[in-house]
Length: 379
Image (cartoon, rainbow, N blue to C red; front, side):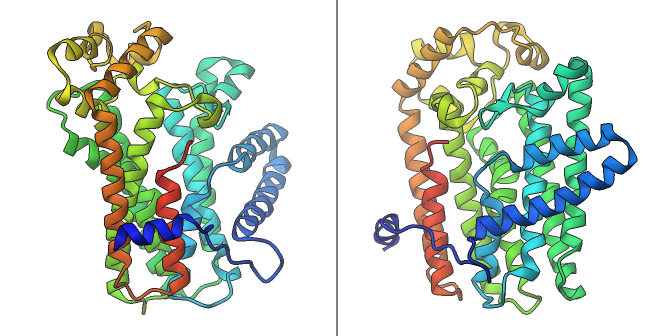
């Protein structure tokens, strides 16, 4: 039944409700962000022009693009039980993009990534001004600024105090879980002894599922007020965890096999850093002795006896040919097919979790379509 529903929804676009004007949901999110950021730029410009420059760079990083998945999931989480006008909840929905930018900028600093969305990362932008140390320091401050601005934007939502308290609880949990997942992620790169597929999936649940799908859905439900049904909260929890895991599994595949011109990021970064993704761990488990020998040579965290910091700085010296060879071996082990199967299984289970949930029909259809779009994407 779940698979039939998936096939039906693949043939239809995601329903996107307009606001009271003529724009779409994404137009409303973009407009809310642009207006808020313009005011912040003006305020910092008045203090010192250099601060205005910092704010403008931050604005550009926020508005440069992206899927806007988090506010979209939050919107449908809210719309699942609410027929009210969208305007009062727009600041809270848009705030999730500021939190997302915080996470991306800090993640790029930790990974020393050169590009994001096909453009230079924040620390590389600032590096051009005053060198590498300044670039990383300024980028950290950009992330911090986005997190503060997200708090301010949520506080602007004209909602009852009881509702805002519930929203804030979801938001705080989302942030803690994102930090916890990021810590485990960098721990895996530096000390992956005993790391397992289950632990890699735990990282996926904390780092990705929580703040991409699961908590935004529950955040949106909280925007509808404290009387929202608990059964729907439970369904969102289940759906969000499954779709979020599938989203990260797709990321794992794109990190090795994605087209950089489409993903906006270099291919093979996970292999260069020895990140113990579910894909890589499955490949090791399924590999023949000869295949495992190659994987150990270039992709295990202790490859060449290098520390995580050394690998991140490029000391591992993996060429594009090396990356291509490892990718080919990973595919030959059957790990890619297994991950694709894991993605399909999770999406089907997520759809099933919504089947009996007390949710508006349009929201159910949108969430089913989002589950497919988020996990079958090319970037």
